[in-house]
Length: 205
Image 1: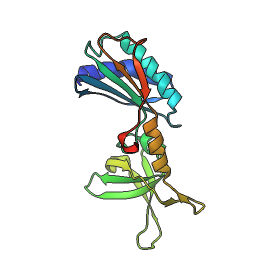
Image 2: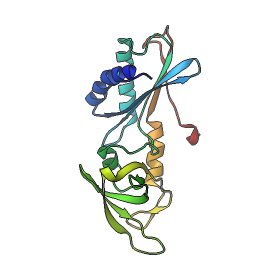
Image 3: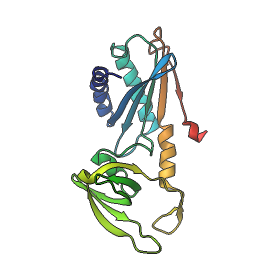
Image 4: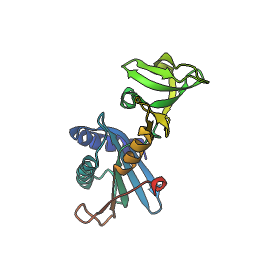
């Protein structure tokens, strides 16, 4: 996707996401055989519900129909929420994952696995799990120290009451993949004749 097309798509779609109370996290156009896939990823502090995804998808479809930004070639529109494997790049991403374990690659080349405790504009307070029975240690990480970060999915973490939490992360990740709406358009299709279906990730099949 060219820079010009990317900018035009963001300019067209970001106000729609904002009006729906969502953050536009990603817009990408990729080839898929004879068609293209326009993938739009949105998120919010409260998460993203399927109804919100479907409603935003309709709004985006109408805006694209009224615009020439996608050209005349056929494409598939996918609107969804981010999965747990997406990179954490903005302060809001870390804040929305408060309480979760993250793997951080530091700017100095080191790596750190820690649980997010609190997040502010400058960085975050984390808890580094102890090893061999040692107690966890607290640490402050400035965002400037972080080169890359992702959520570490936990499947057998104990919750605060001592019960097994079969990964809040695993559950949330599954829900994320379901918050997904797909519409397919031919060069001869319009919004009224397009097909729509809820799709699942192959990993969940």
